[in-house]
Image (cartoon, rainbow, N blue to C red; front, side):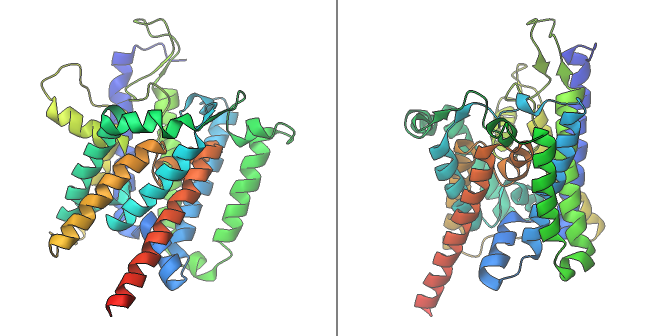
Length: 367
């Protein structure tokens, strides 16, 4: 229990998020960690190296987060993922559209930030359109469609939608499931000799998973206040959801744009999500500058511009609708063993794979 006030804890939460994201940005740039690239390598070349890197990140995040939960350091049930409202249609539609968008936009939300740090102006355009669409889906016209149409298709699971709650008959619940799922993922990942002998694969996957674990600790332990003196209720300092958070890169981009546009509004503050988005860009830029790989890159033509704009819009809408992206749901949410996160992960991969197949079919027809 923290005796400090939210105002005293805020710098630790914000700078903790920034530092972890900085590490992720630098390592992501070095190792070419890319979830869209993982699907592309698999679909187009039958190569699973980067897909295994993504799965390693999930395994590390799952095992580490479960260990923190079981040790009593955090309570994963206080995040947005394992809640009782199972909005299955939102997970499927939002996840699929996010997968389509990240293919058109040359990368997911985290890769967009990494590429911005390396000098990619196309990704800056994606960032802006992703952020605008995300905000419109949170609080604007697209939000009405999200709430009134997609979220109407839901099932209430009183016990919660995480697998330990859904499978109460499993001995030792979360510990057993985390070991079974995490162990199976690790076994699959390291069954491949090329993966075992390529250091960057392990570095990228392990660091990404550990960053998510660290994010849970910063937000759920350091930033936790049992009784906010202003509200007399428990609080998680500087989170946009008011709940415990780790890394996700859709809504934070929207809140970053809002913060920049309302800079003089003293009620707007740098949150965990805003700091994490800035940290990824800074970390990637630091690595790019240090290794002299920073390069300005622009659009090829008008079609390329339009494709990336549409990709950003689809990611913004899809990511908010599905409650997260390839990192937010695909790793952070997955680490809670939430059924919706697993469903979103599958839907994102399906949307990306289908779009890639369509793109190659079009290329074949034009040839």
